[in-house]
Length: 74
Image (cartoon, rainbow, N blue to C red):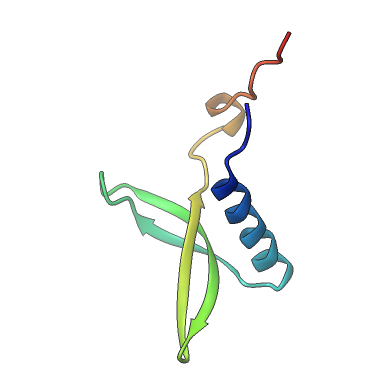
């Protein structure tokens, strides 16, 4: 399984934001359900205004139960 270029680019942006201290954790409502999500955002500036770019939300519950790594190729 290969990671797509857009995901790699987003990850690089996230790393740069983390390195420069430009990350925020925001409480947001999921558009589809209205459920509360805690979203990791990069923080930028545009003409003196803050701009928040969402990257993903923190997993509810135990992430080890929600995700599994890709299966090894044989």
